[in-house]
Image (cartoon, rainbow, N blue to C red; front, side, top):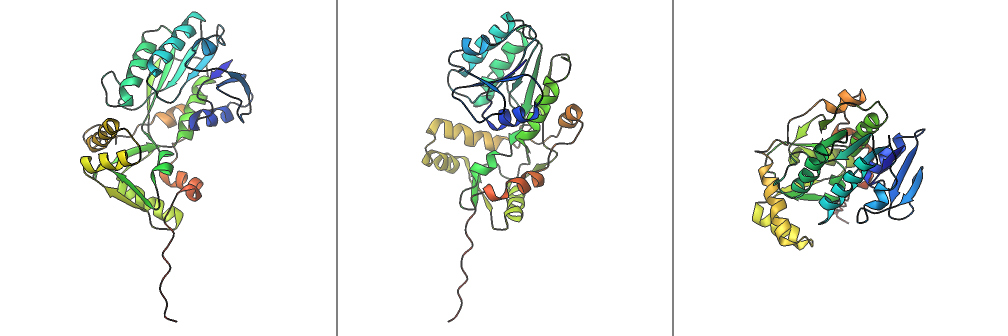
Length: 282
């Protein structure tokens, strides 16, 4: 049996769709429109997840981040070990490690616990999600502090494809899998690609860290977190957020989707500025 947590997120939902014909159970906080068996559970009550597992089961471990996520995921990993689960496949992030900025620290501490747990594992370490661009573009503009750095983005459907491939094959040696899209682009190039796909102007506004901090705080983000996020954006040029791996193709047998394919599938979902009506003499 394959137990999926985070089943209603963009990765989990796509993963459920790729496991047709497999024995799948999705752990959900409330009933959802998923084409598989569902069991009510919650990371805040790890026993509701660990209690589902039996010897030989495989667990897809994924959730959003919150203050208690490290303890919750560690508890589920420990319960999976006690249940003699065959494998845990988890979604981490590029550059994760104890002490890493923002969510990288949380993911890093979870990953370290999994590596030392004795449970066979696959740690997926994706770059940025293309799907996040959908929420970042507002009225034809999006902001950041990336400068001219090239940043890699991956379609979350490719992450689901990798997870499905791993979960449906014989358990392989434990490994980390850095996942990327096929290209790394500047945000000016990303804006141009979105503009072409949606048929309207979309612009990227690059801001210095203090101004980006203020922009994020104005949207409701706590100021300390806003500053850390803006600083992380500015540091991505020096960190390794541009190198491309072959992991998606190695694991699935096909190359990852380029940004152009993602945009073709999601062009109508972007919030773009309405074109200004041209003034005509009457």
